Length: 432
Ligand code: 4AD
Ligand code: MG
Picture (spheres, rainbow, N blue to C red):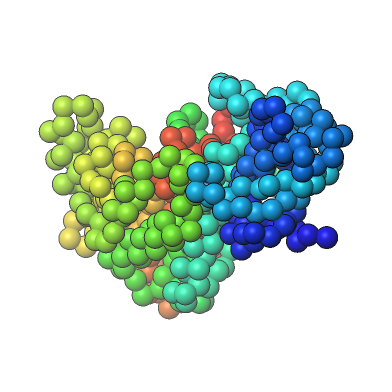
């Protein structure tokens, strides 16, 4: 019996005989040789089957294996600089679990609509697997960052009785004899949690009935939301900067082979170092109003093309603060120096990807917050528990929300965020 291992761990077994379990990614044959590209979920390795090293029957059967046939391969691990990944297997035995013919996704180019309809299989491709491994690393690094920073994970509920980020993008679901809404953001609960625990984060699925069909929008995405008691806007910006730099550094260290599979220009990621440029909304507006390609109207929110212009000006994420109160949510704290502005920040990724993070200092004054709820025509009764946080030990506090898929797309250099979640949900598609 040889040791069972994975492609990821081949370097620990050079010169030894091991068994790999996986699927045929690709195969070509030349006379007395079969070259099987085998994938096992951790990577892909070339397995060389020489006619003299296996039984005649085995050699013939291997010749018939189609893409995605499942098998166990036993052989010697050879270090080979020319081989992708640096290793090759000299095969001595093959156990075929299933010989497949007619796998629906071939190495040729398929349209993205077709691939999305085959998402349950598309995930097996090299590129998709690389993105999923980076996503996995990003999640791990984020959790580690917050754990090491003494943040307590306090997850918010998915079923909520009312809106958090505006009422137009809510999914309503039947809830026994009443209605509930799928959460748009865990923030309001994170605020309560922060008053209990000091520094917290919530990390979970988030739902937006967005009519937007852009490459940046999903109807279900994952959001990580830290919230800190005794924090101001500057602390919120600092946390976002530290978090982004921490995760990018980890991915650069741990995901070299994935970034290579994605043909990511890592020199761009190596530049993601503090400090990030910070601009106020007014400074950003001035740039856009003078920009020939911008249709920006003063006083309004930035559109995706505006964000692209602003982010392409810098080689690292840019932070835009102090937006007009009218384009932002009710809970943001008014700027004491300008009643028309709020103490908020949007972090735009570099390379034109747009908003990765939205956050703010929160309104901590009971009366002002009640006024904001009224202005936004939100149901005061539903917010009584939230207002309690301003009645009993109110303190300056703030936090932000990071869209996981947008963050992963930016790190991977992937154009569309639908590739950055295993099973994307968009306005057009909930299958498979
Ligand atoms: O800017 P947003 O709407 O902020 C909030 O929800 C705050 N309550 C967060 C907080 O302060 N705790 O959303 C935060 C981030 C965006 O910057 C974006 O990255 C992501 O969530 N996001 C989406 N990602 C994918 N698809 C969508 N439809 C998204 N909407 C927002
Ligand atoms: Mg936002």
